[in-house]
Amino acid sequence: MLEPLANQQIRKFKAAAQLLEPSLKVGKAGLSDGFIRTVSAELERHELVKIKFAEFKEEKKTLAPLLAEKTGSHLVMRVGNVMVLHRPKPVPAESAA
Image (cartoon, rainbow, N blue to C red; front, side):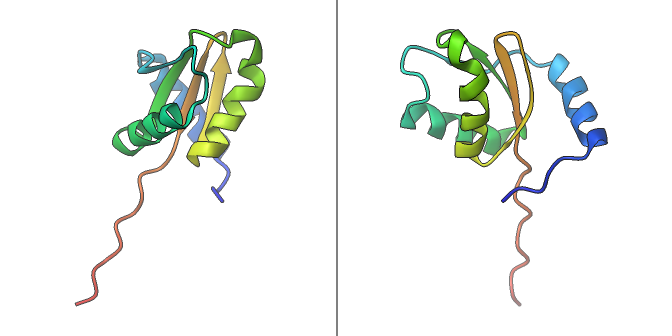
């Protein structure tokens, strides 16, 4: 389970997200397994990911938190047809010497 984000963190992520272009789009396939894997991979590369709803605009209020849950990420914000997810990069475990 993820630790909830502090208000200060949320503000920082929202500000950073303003500069991002949507890197992924929810299309006709919706939240397919492949799309969820793609979002998860994108979150591994970039902690902050902006996703646009090209389809399923009517369901975005329910799909956005569902996608966050399925990718183990935080829903930072959802404005219009765009949502922003954040997942912290895993802290590398120190190797036992």
